[in-house]
Every structure is written in structure tokens, then in C-alpha cells.
Image 1: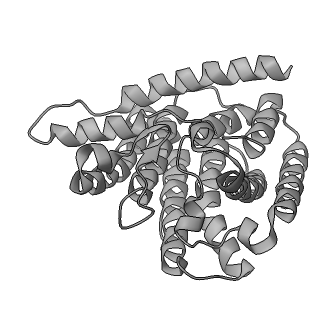
Image 2 (image 1 turned 90 degrees about the vertical axis):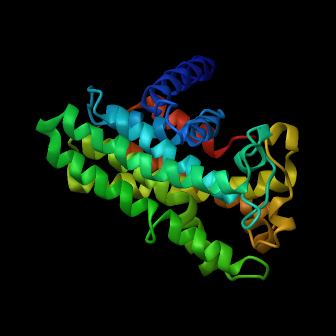
Image 3 (image 1 turned 30 degrees about the vertical axis):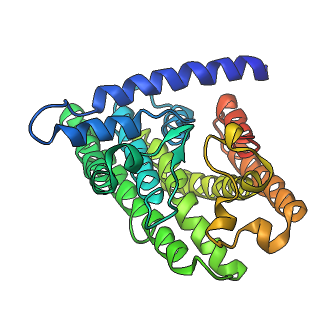
Length: 298
């Protein structure tokens, strides 16, 4: 069964790639270099985790229409902008992402900054297109837009990045680390699954439960990232290893050690799946996907 799901995942990734391409801006005008940089960044590959989680949660609650697609593209644009800015010299100063040169290395630091800005702004232009295509779903689209903005902003991913940057270079306690992880990593996963549920018409109680599932997945996902940064290789990971050590960042590995970190990954992932199974609806592929992503090797 797992091999069938793995094949299905690869097929779904290709379908998501086509959706992303369809929402990219045309490369014309004097500013077309920025459209080129946006495409280079967005189409660099990757697991396409966030749009896939969004789509599968939408299907979990019975969604069948294409109203989800502009939001899938928008979410991946927001995620990509955060990676482009993370890689900048003023941030993590990384030259490799997904096995190839980072955006600022190819286009220059100035265009790297602007490409991130462009992706963030264009994400909301893209999501807003749903209003024109599905005016009868305006209320659900409006709620989804609010989630998208909130989870990407100062109370979500950006807020987590602020604290992450501010606290880099010295040790932090577990409460601060949990705050960073909940916002920097968890928020976009929460956003993805909550938007899927919202656009499918799920009730508030179900959306709140999905937020908890995604929160636990986010913590497990990030702690696994901490483990891989120490145990994997740059070739397997597709980005530099020991990046946390280089940037003097506190992680679950530096705080608790690999063994305890691995136990936390297991605990949070089991609880996430149990919560998901408590819903009256099922999506077996979504359950498999979450398990695979949490226990990934790259």
C-alpha cells in the first residue's frame, strides 16, 4: 500500500507543479527580471507539502471544486518567499537550496530581497482571484484569506522568524524555542490545513481540531529537521548541513539530545494522527502523507 501511496504522491506533486505554473505572472515589462526570479524560486522543486496538505484536507471535508487551487499556489508562494529571505546573507547566508544555487546567489542580493517581496505580494493577488472565479463562495474565501494573512504575518510565520533571528547566537530556553517553532514552522502548516477545511465548508469545531493536528505535525516536522541537520548529508538533504550549529541556534537536538528529540517526533506524530482519526471523515492518503513527512529523511 505504501508504494502505491508513494506513486500517488509523486503524481500529485506533478499536478501541483502545473497549478503553480498556471498562476505565475507572465515575464514581460521592464521589471521582467523579477518574474524570472519568482519562477526560479517557486519552481525549484521540493515536497510541495503545504499545497498538498491544503488540497487533501479540502478533499477530507468533501471539497471537489477548483476554488482551492489559487490558495494552493498562494500558500506555496508565501512559503517560497520565506525560504528566499531565509537564505539571504543577513539571515542564514545559505548558498544551496533544494540542491541548487539560492535565489540571491543567482540574481544578486538586491533581487533576492525583491523576489521574496514580489512572491509575498503576488500570493495575495493570486488568492484574491478566487473571488472572481467563485463569487458564490465569497464568505468562505474571505475567511480563508484572513487565515492566510494571519498565519503568514506577525502573529504567525513572520513573528516566529523575528524571534528566531533575534535569539540567534545565544542559547534560549524551551519555551522560547517552542514559540519559534509554533510560529515559524507550524503556522503555515496550520494555515494550509485550515484553509482546506474552510473552503470545503467545515464547521468551526472541525477547523479548530485541524489546527491542532497541524500544530503537532509542525512541531514534529521541525524537530525532525533539527535531527536531519545533524545526522544527514548535504547531498541527501539538498541544503547545507550543520547550518544550525554554524548560526549558533538552539534546537531540540542541542537542548535535549538526539534520543529525546526522536521521542518527541514520535509522540507528536502519533497524537496528530489520533486527532485526525477522531473526525467522522477519513482520508487514508492524508494520514499516510503526514506520517511520511514527519519521519522523512530529507
